[in-house]
Image 1: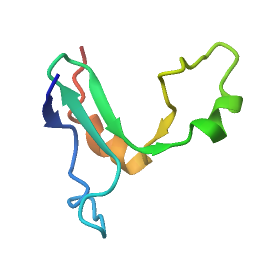
Image 2 (image 1 turned 90 degrees about the vertical axis):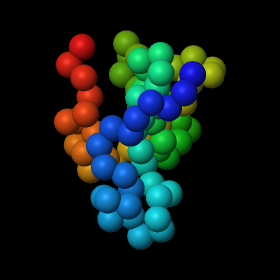
Image 3 (image 1 turned 60 degrees about the vertical axis):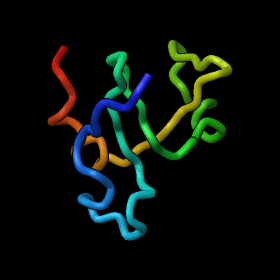
Length: 78
């Protein structure tokens, strides 16, 4: 699996003050997406809706609204 492309603007283009250590969204060579964000599993897991669950190997990752809106234009419809 490889990174194919960034979705949206780079952290620097979004105004990152520390040159790139901010949330990011990428498309992978197998068609999946990788997200760099803040691990909030410990705080949010207890608040998951009753019809949602997380496997032991999964984490709840939060990315800023700004990051997702910047990526939106690059997310394929299908």
